[in-house]
Image (cartoon, rainbow, N blue to C red; front, top):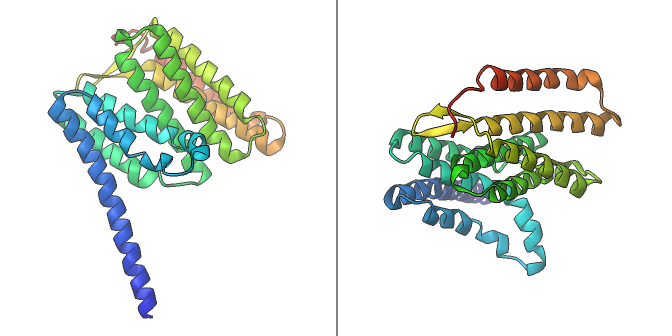
Amino acid sequence: MELLKTARRRSFLSESFYILLNVSLAAAILGTVLVTAAPWYAFLLVLLSKWRVFAVRTRYWVANIRANMVDTIVGLSVVILLFTATGSLLTQIALTLLYVVWLLFIKPRSSRLYIIIQAQVGLFLGIAAIMQLSANWPSSLVVLLSWIIGYSVARHVLSVEHETHLNFLSLLWAFIVAEIAWLSYHWTIGYSLPGNMQLPQAAIIITLLSFLAERVHASYQRDGEVQVQEVLLPSLLTVSIIAILLFVFGSAASI
């Protein structure tokens, strides 16, 4: 009985320490952006938090980097959004709290549903962060970063589904994301948010298309072919929202 109590106490202490570390990381990132009014030191904090990726033999580094890409994308994207929202403390606090939710409740989960959610969050935030700054970047950099994000999120989902064409499908989706990002670079539409931020239309469209692509792939994996009745509703939902964005809200202010 004493052994069980000790185990519970250790479990409680380790869980509390884990929560404290993650909350401290989010708070430190916010504090760094507020104090320096620049994203660079906050970027460094995010990268330093991934030290365990390299705390193994070098032959495991590539696999660990791939496994942690989505979390890294989310962290770096949050930094960019915090920097973009400079001047609106409430918006920055709200973003920090959302990052805490990511660290404590979304990132640690490993079920298929949460893997998909993780990929969608990483894709949306990554593209949104890129589009916030794309006006000051060459199109080649926007395309390259979008390609990396598209490849990372696709591989994140497909790797848990034991997909035999993992690399090909990940590269294909990366190409699609990069192509849409290139088109959006020349016609970037954004919807105003608090804190001088913009919600890029491209981030919404790419996320919706990724949702549809996942549904199509899931149907094919399960049945050996794409079942129309399984993808009809997601298709109608995706096409309807994109049509509304393009034709009804297409005149929103450019980023």
